[in-house]
Length: 306
Image (cartoon, rainbow, N blue to C red):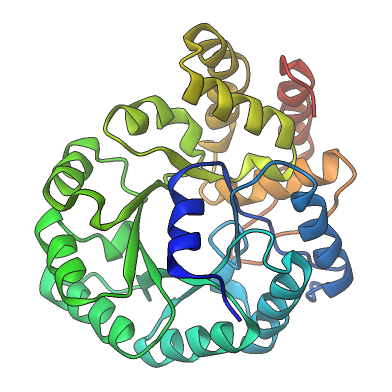
């Protein structure tokens, strides 16, 4: 039995959102036992919700069987302590099928990913999202990014026509457009910051009413991630700027060296702290030894150690 929509909305509106990586073994196969341990470890920290099989969780690379295992393990491990949200997307039939698998497993909501590959007009992206929303029962957060980006006008249209749309996750970083969306739609939706390493623009997000965001670095510096979030919300500007300067800016500079490092560096970080989740799957690549040394230096220099 899933949590109520009200409970899920409340959790998504305030508090740090965690996005665990997906564990792979030495043969590049999903590792269910260490994944369950990872979810349990997440719960030992202060989190508001758990998002599984997302971008950080390499949703694009998972088989249906692996997805089924992930949503089942996550639902059983979390056991309603906080909401669990899983991704769906790719083609319309796949998104509907993945969503129904998640619902049967006890997942509380769906993060709807962009459609596969193709660039499409706004009305086509809207139709993609609406068709999926109309054919599933779970509440949905729409992930507004990449080739699935909807304008404020179309997000509002989707909200007006789909009662089970409860949130918008921003992956564009376009603060002007997002502010338009928020001011036009108001609290009909919950708004989540979702650019890679969202902490880097968290101050801008907060200034327009986006109170929370997805934290991938939580996978290897959970205490720092929480300390930063609480400092941000408390208005402790000097602390926020210090952590940005000493951790997040160097991390983002390293992340920008190669496409896909928004995920790859997270897995490298997890390994650094003894929470190895294996390697990313192709087409992503892992950082080289020099880059891992740089990452270790960034983590070691952080003012609030994990």
